[in-house]
Length: 116
Image (cartoon, rainbow, N blue to C red; front, side, top):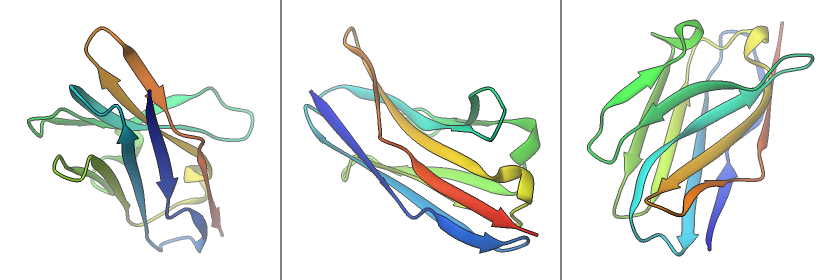
């Protein structure tokens, strides 16, 4: 069993920044890709950003140029730096981690609210 704990969410004004962290603990053996989903009010869950163990990244078109995903494999932690935040970025952000064969583990989610 792997546990994922997100931190760094909160309330910020439009144009501001937040940095989310997600630390994995427990059975962290063979964690491969990690990333972030979000679900805004009345919206479907969407992939925000993902990163492989080797550092290859991909982003939703809506956040390209504003968000940066990174990871520290030694700390089993993934980060999401969010700049130039917009009200449309509001939602619950969920961290995930993928392990070979076992599959995907999820964090509990952290609320991000961007006011206009």
